[in-house]
Picture 1 (tube, rainbow over the protein chains, first blue to last red):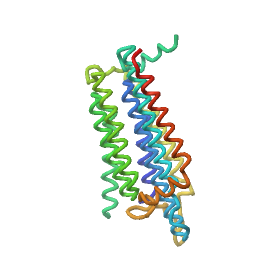
Picture 2: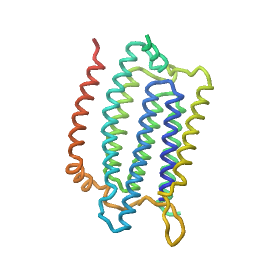
Picture 3: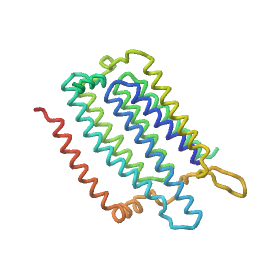
Amino acid sequence: MPIHYYIILAATLFCIGVIGVLTRRNAIIVFMCVELMLNAVNLMLVAFSKLHYGTYLKNGAMGASGIDGQMFVFFIMVVAAAEVSVGLAIIVMMYRNVHSVDINFLNRLKN
Amino acid sequence: MSLVEIIFWFLSGLALISAIMVLLSKNPVHSVLWLIAVFFAISGHYILLNAQFLAIVNLIVYAGAIMVLFLFVIMLMNQNAETEPRSKSTWIKLAGAIAGGCLLIVVVAAVRDSENLIQNIGGKAYAKTAVTTHGEIGLIENLGRVLFTQYVVPFEISSVLFLSAMVGAVVIGKKD
C-alpha cells in the first residue's frame, strides 16, 4: 500500500485523540484518548518500518532492515502499560477526594 | 481492487468510525468498547503489514489488559451516562474540533509533498509503498533475536520501569 494512506490514517486517528483530549471532561475518557494517540503513532512506526524494509530489500541489503521501528513499538507498549497503571491510580485517588472525575475539579490543586 | 486494498479500506473505516464513536458516546463503558474495536482494527493493520508479533501483543496488552483495567475503574466508580460531566458550552467543543482539524491539515500538508516519500520508477514519480503481506522482520524469531542482543539493555531497564510503576500504583492507591 502507498505510504501516504498510512500517514493520513494515522494522522487522522491522532487528531481524533487530540480532539477528545480537548473537548471531553471525563478524566477516564481523556486518558483513553491519550491511548488512542499512542496507538496511532504505533501504526505509523510499523508502516515506516515496512517502508524501509522494502527500500533496503530493493537495494539488495540485509534482510533485517527496518526492524528497529517494530522494536520501538514494543517499548512504547511497555511504557504505555506502566503509564496506565499509575495514571488510573491517580484518577482513583482523585475520585476518592472530590467524588468526581471531572477534570475541571483539578484546578483545586492551585491553592 | 485487490484483496489487500479491500482489507485496508475496511480496517481503516472501522478504525476511524470506532475512534469517532469513542468521542461521541455518553456512556464511558461504551467508549471503552469502541476503543477495543479500534485496537482490533489496528491489530488487523499489523497483520496486513505482516507484523504478527506486534498484532498479538497489541491484542493481549491493550485490548486484554489495559482495557480491562479501564473497565474495572469505571465500574468501581459507578460511572454511567447520568454521572457524565456536562460541558458548559458548545463553543469549547467547537474550538477543540477546529484545533484538532487544523492540526490534521498541517500534518497532512507537511507530509504529503515530502520528497523522501517519492520514488522514481522509469522516470515517473510514484509514492513509496509499505510492504504488505510478506517480509520476515515482523516474525517473533527475528524480533526476539534483536531484542535479546541489540536491545537487551533497554529491555532490562523496562523491567525496572515496570517494578517502579507497580510500587507507585500501590503507593498512590493506598488508603491512608
